Image (cartoon, rainbow, N blue to C red; front, side, top):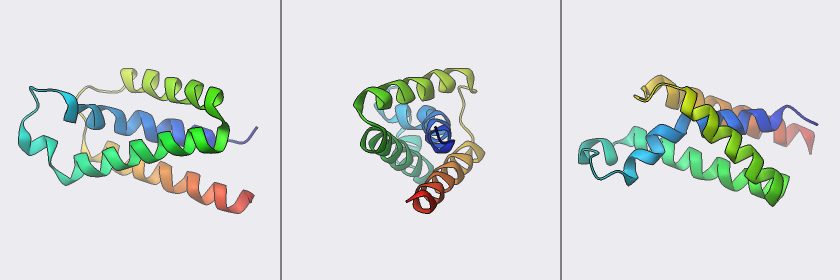
Length: 101
C-alpha cells in the first residue's frame, strides 16, 4: 500500500467546505464565483475522479468517505491557506503517481 492515497484524502478534505458552498442558497454570490471557490471545486472533483479511476470504485468510495469525514473535523470557515494546502497535496499526489509508474 502506498502513501499516495493519503494525499488525495487530504485534497478532498481541505477543499470540501469551499466546494460545497456553491450548493447552499445562503452563500453570497461573491463567494460562490470567487477564484478560490473555483480552484477548490476543480481540486475536489479531480481528486474524486482520480480516486475512483486509480483505486477502483469500492476503494474510491472508502477514500472519499474518509476525506469527507476529515473535512467535518476541519474549521467550517475555509481560509485561502486550506485551498493552498489542498493544491499542494494534489500536486504531491500527482508527483508520487508519476514516479511510481
